[in-house]
Image 1: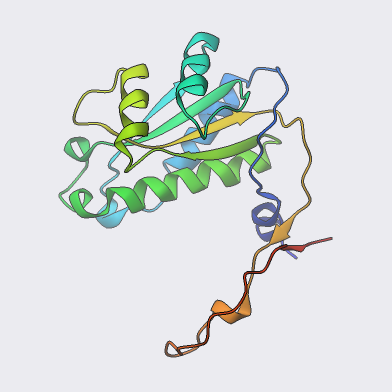
Image 2 (image 1 turned 135 degrees about the horizontal axis):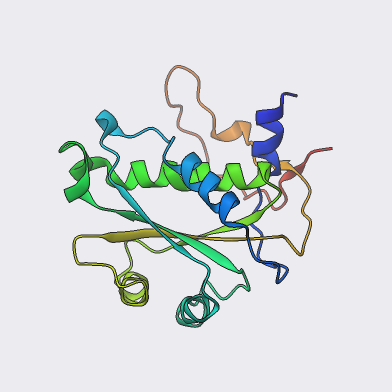
Length: 187
């Protein structure tokens, strides 16, 4: 198996971190990876807020029901249609910023870091506190938070490949089946 596939399979949601701070150089590399993501018509409709201040991290962690993990850093991936290179961003900013988020998650594995994707958009009950804590202007929409840190837990590489969900040439209606409880662990 090649290195990139191994890195993808190693990408797991990490919810427990050591107290060790994340080096600014590594955070910059994650941002470079994010901005290497594809965008519709090269619109690049993103802005990023990097948080390493413990007080701001504590505010985020206490205000987000699904974000109460002890990470020492976070990257907020935001859409800013007004700063995009073209109008394609109006329609595709969510996909573009999601691709940037995924690049951060995969690049972190290569740097020995752990991450977890905290969904923000489209829930106003999550978007509003994030926007307030990060002092985002009205035209900047938070899509996701990526918590980043040195992992305090280890998870085995895996795939969640399910051949039942794959259709070749055309979609074939099928009977529903029971959910698969455990993903296939890779060696």
